[in-house]
Image (cartoon, rainbow, N blue to C red; front, side):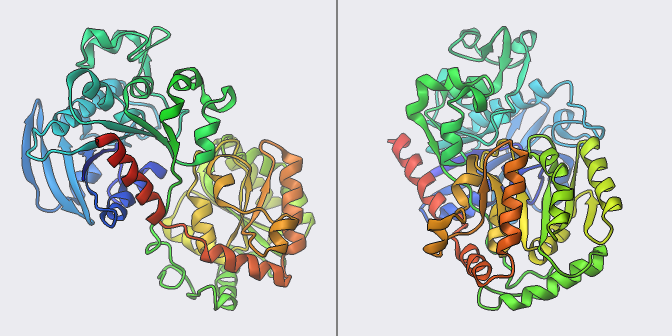
Length: 467
């Protein structure tokens, strides 16, 4: 089985979020399921700089498609300098403003992907796997122009690739696609909508999110588009790279440990205390996140005094909305030794924070899958999460039944509720330091958060639609 993955970012070459982690980890996981996956990615400066030897496999207007093997990935790189060789991020400039020509950039990306899918690069896939709005026109091209069947994965339905209707003429699509059965969406163009109505299968990144996007609250206006095709929607929870996220071998840590040597975690807690001026004692909660409304971190900002009053400590690592950044800075000044912040992001530091903290807070209003709670489980840092999306699917709540059965791995609270978050924090504080806490840590560290099961599900899906 040969599959072409089409993704606008792929770790470790280029990353802005969880999409890159999935696109980077899934190909290796699929090998054991009998799937050869090659990945098409735009030739951003970071991607081009990371490449070793490449081979040109296709000439295209303004550039070429290069094939390379890099970091264990078999890559097709779309090298069109006029579209992708620019300073800033994949989707916008250094100030965060979207590139004015994003519609043309990713329409071209999808068009070339469809040509590769039809065998023009000398390799013929059986299935095409497109990710998010940036690749969502690939199923459109294949449906209207011919080619192998396609899967579209929604990593976050809030991002829909919506542009004014005047851009349609720049997209290289047949006139028939400008319709309610194509990319037209309230007189605009929506790349995501086009993919949703033409893909042969649709996946999301958790079973709960697959149900949530069929509702007005979570569907972000697309629930009516998806409803007639709900039978094609499947939720497959993400995994993580358990070699990268492994407390037994992680060289970022002050002390390595396993589920059997949990006492060694104390060295990492002490190192974190020393690094950020936190005083000993009490459970240490952490946040590793974009500081945004979606992540529910305004609810946490309102609960910081409550957390400290219960005897807890808080370490915040992230960047985001200026108001939230300021709220956490003020909390650190208000509670020296009890609250610390690192506004920004540091990959190695995120590993140290997971290993040194007792619990991690993820009060998201919606979370398609989430990877942070999976990293936390791996490191015995118990997740305190909202009951939504992949958070609900991957954390077993420490209620009475779960605790009696000794299977709990964290704490789950109602979504979009400051009081519910406060109660969950209080529950964690009350349980911290008891033998039961250690049982939960060991449960968490032994949970299967790898790609193995998910890769088997994807392989089965590919085989189903390729028939």
